[in-house]
Image (tube, rainbow, N blue to C red; front, side, top):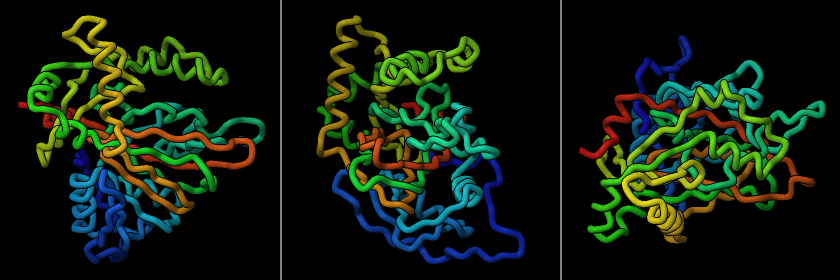
Length: 311
């Protein structure tokens, strides 16, 4: 999950950290998630506060902080306390001058979409198409429709633990192909305004293979690492069995008892563990409401990835 590989202490010179007390948490649902009640993410954080947030992510999968007001630089500074950040792959949706901030929503300026309107329509975990997938994401809601545009989160740890032992062992021996190109072609079929996938961009993101079961590097808790948005095939079984198993996993991992539905308010910040939590967005009335979100992404790395593999 979140393991920093560089000095991520973003305390401002000559300024004492503001958030010094241990965070107070409130459960969001039985499935997963807690709310941190006393965090101001715009301010520097003591190390023990960051450690408490990481521990909450390890245990509960997502952490919500309401009532936040973040500039892009403050969003980046807070995010960097959890590790190096991943530059946004969709360059047309990078915040101008801030390539680490991904702009999501239906915002149009001067006749041009400046926010990604199509992201998150399918269940997925962010950037599983990379050799070292993203460790976590931190999403900030600036403008949120009053109805719809929820984010559904599914607990992949609980989904694994609910399986019979023999099924767990079976899945632990399988691997799946994750394909950015296949995902993108599906996206274009649903949204013809998306540009063609260039050969250069396709070459940047070749298909990768990941185990169907990974583990949290710190807690060793196992999760089903299945991503309907990107997985095209399960290896080691027939094509027919692969298709059946993909449908089975998609249905099982998103059963209601594993899912928390987050209804966004402006000022919400939600951070989540991409190894053990899948998510998807719900529709909203794009003709009458604006949705504007900013996301930062904690980059994956080889050491954390190796530690997530079963021994």
